[in-house]
Image (tube, rainbow, N blue to C red; front, side, top):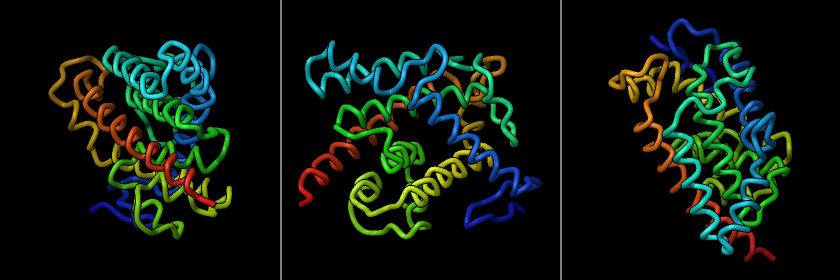
Length: 230
């Protein structure tokens, strides 16, 4: 039977401290590669500004960012050659890590286009929350953030200190690592006969589309909410 750590399901046989380290390591890498940019990867800010210059409008730029991310997800193998991802304390397949870098950079670029500063720990926490999907409210409840509205709006309109924002980031990392441990993403890609692939191109694009839809909605709502604050 799986155990529990901090209210989360811990895969049978998994070491809780290893999962904790993996969650922190994963979010650190997603921020470094997906938000800040590293090596050959542009930062989310560069991606956003390039799309804005090409499209001329915010909505058009968001469309370009999402379209580019879909192509990268479909191609597969993106950033899997970069060091660091497959050395997590709990083994994380490079293909899956690459997918989440693509998704993080896409969501962070959308945040930039909606007027948010991705150097702000709260904005970074909001970006990662989008990746956790329906688990976002669960992550927020653990740091005492409740209320109505989307998860992104709740974070960005809260008085969340940097330390709590870091806890949100770690909570998202734990959710993602735990999902891998319980086989959710493996089941998505089980029928795809690609050597070494955990999530096939079709499943990647499907999941990325869901994340993009959430990001569009959440950051638009947050932009309106933050703009209406006194």
